[in-house]
Length: 257
Image (cartoon, rainbow, N blue to C red; front, side, top):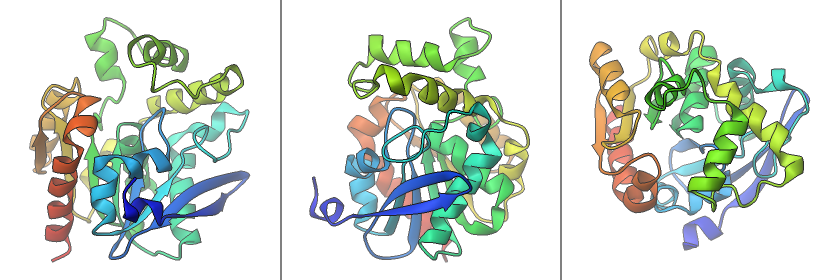
């Protein structure tokens, strides 16, 4: 663990009935860093990607619902896009940050796009990684010959193909985690919210990611830059995270001018 990451402190935000845990550390412009499924704020800032950004920015790294130390409500309606956007806004409120640069990956990119749609005034810039803003998980579902991806399906897939991702998932966690994953199928209004956002927007993705073609297509349709990176959905962060962070940081620096 880097010295920057080791210096992070724990904090909590209240979002309705939910309690959202987040890590805060680093100095500079505030950056809301939103992790993907099966991860946590702690894990995300510990990657090369997160650690590199922590050298440059004041990082706020929340745990999504049913992940890390945040609430895991037994109500699937708590996991929709609008609710998740409100939870991110609550983290900004708790940290006394009016506007932040927002960087999300995979599920975190879905949540970041929800923040753009429902609380656009809170974003100084937006960097969406590894995600189809228009069709979400329906894009990999189509590639795999499925109608949709359920939470139980993705949990089983993680256990079979990347068991380290799901090592923390105990039987008592599965239902809430499945709802958190299935919440990503709530896409109404998100693509439009991103496309009309007044703050600068960039998309970043590995060239071997199943989302890559959709990322390029959405970017071209909306005249947005794509930060083109090596790797697939998993290896891009694991093996090329520092490069990805440097590219994202340059985008943020440019957007702040």
